[in-house]
Length: 519
Image 1 (cartoon, rainbow, N blue to C red):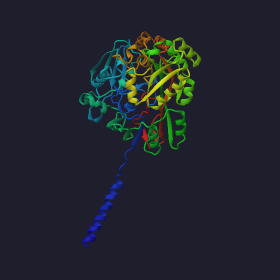
Image 2: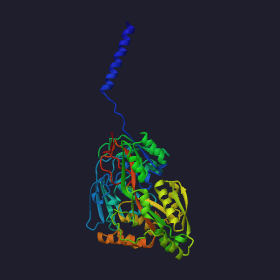
Image 3: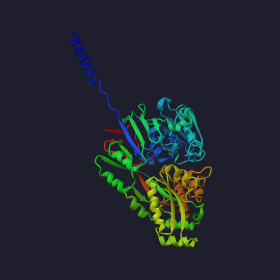
Image 4: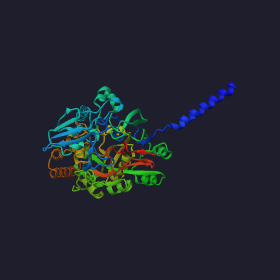
């Protein structure tokens, strides 16, 4: 009897436990698995890293004072982010921002205050702590009149001031306390206020983010993001096809897009702003010192053939050194139509009747390597031989900043104002190898007056005119050859919904936030 009674109690306890489990269900964690093309992070500091695969993560972790609407890059539709409102003086020199109250930094670093904003923007303005420092040169002072007010005083008017405090590059707001406490470790332990918080970094494997349940716009519906580094395109696509990944960085080619679009339950997103693929010619070296040689290269490039190869869905022909759609873009510029006979004649006139050979370093990443291989074939027809050295992407970035390559094929998307492109790629202060060098690979210095004057020009029509003249001078001098604009390609499972229409992104990737769902 005792044995039966004991068994009965166990049986009854089991029923009770089971009953309790049915009445208190445990919900499964929603994990979004992403595959990107890089082999590793550079560093996860938004003021320092310009690497595309780092930049994709930043808007998920950080906020700016203002922001572009998710999925949009329209300057006229910028909206409040960490700032709830702002005003500017009549002369455009003083800007006052009122902060939201109660916004919390990740990992217990406390409430966002004006001290964090002052610290962040000062940090963004210094060469030692920011690669975006040039854009803040006209900031005279950044102060905090009180806990929730930030005052910016400019030395000169900056018509695109909101672009300097938006959710992009130097405009991201970091935790003062975290940066000071973590020091150099901040680059692998980023602390922001965004919808997702940093959780873990595994070198050459992945970054893990978790939902910021205290996010001021509401808790995200996705609990965890696993951002995997998968540089091999075939492996990345196979993992996506097998269900190991929900979202992948795609191959920016027409054939890839058309093939993947046919897969059941898959959606392909083609996202702007496009990266302008430009062939920069180092005018400080060898034959390229002669403008006739640079003009010969420009005439030997066949843009139509390039776009046809890449695909009309993912590429568009370029004519100017500023991307289409940017404020200040002009198509009224000197042009160099494809003409092999003209290219050969220019080389002969420059003293190179038998052609020239140039050393060129290029990354293994297909979106740059393949176009460079096409350019290699095109230029060969004019007697211009490119001796290509293919290296890892990190080595490519290092070497081109050391003037190791005669030609540099570079692709970039920037804040959509002409100044951002002109300053970084064509201002003499940005010439690589100099103390203030950034990405002026061509050593171009012919439009400094127009670029610098336009930056603080209060009259918008005069500003546009200055940007137009700058583009004309740069192309007349053949500092570079704008080839084509390449859009960003991502593929996702159909059950992933961003929560808004994804058209443009300055970060090169989809915007993931509290509206994003994975069903």
